[in-house]
Each structure stands twice: as structure tokens, then as C-alpha cells.
Image (cartoon, rainbow, N blue to C red):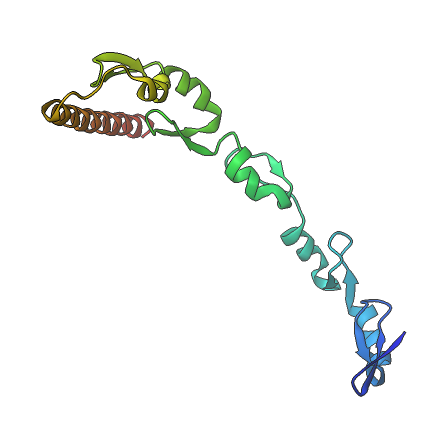
Length: 176
């Protein structure tokens, strides 16, 4: 098939489907057929001597370094970030990092821990904290109580942070 682009007439190469200037088409066809092949997966033209390398680097399944499962290259990023059972996730209650496969069991225990609500002086499970905060019957009556609440809250946050650091240090020492 011949097409005219400006002043130059081109012919589409049967092998690579590119427009080639008509004076060069014979030489191009020989070179193209001898040196290039179309990838059966993506359709890219690849030098024949690099076809296997192209497949391995672009299309071949790869092993996940965390779970050792063989994953199609196209979905590897989503596997690593969202699907892999060994990816590291964080507990919503204590912010402790752990493998995703262990998260449900950990949160079952961790969410049953209680903390004192300084507004109503009742102990609330961590898993129920958000609902409690929106419906807490306790109110701050004056600025003195408000200051006490803020002081108590900050004291609690500091204690929880120190406790988490202690647990993390123990785990690091335990795992060597």
C-alpha cells in the first residue's frame, strides 16, 4: 500500500506495519524480516536475538519475594500492595505493623482492649471507641474539667505510645 506524506511516497512494510519511504522499502523488508519479530503477547517489534529477554523482562510471571507465589507481571504491583498475604499492614487499634495474614486475629484481641473515656469515666473497647465518641453521654462542664480531660488524654496517648515502643522493642529482641 502506497501513501503520500507531503512530497515523499511511503509503503507499509508487511512485516512490521510501519510506513517506509518507497526508495528504501526493498532494503528495509530484507532487514526487517531477518532481524525483527513481532511479540506474540504485546505486538511490539523486537530484535530476534532479544526476543527471549523481552519476554522474561516484560511478560514472564515473577515470584513474589514475600509469599513466594508466582504472579502475572501485569498484576504484580496490585498483588504486592493489596493482595499478598505477607504484605505488611498496620493494626487500626495499636498501629503495630504485621503481615496481613495475621491482621484479623491480632485485631480481634487488640480491639477488645479497653481504654478509659475521660468524658464519662467508663471503659470502652477500642473497637467501639468511634461509636462511643459520637454518642458519649459525658460532656465537658467547664474549662477546669476540659483542662483535666486534655491532660488525661495526653497522658493516655503518651502511655500508649511508650507501651507500643516497649512491645516493638520486645519483638525486635525476640526475633533476633
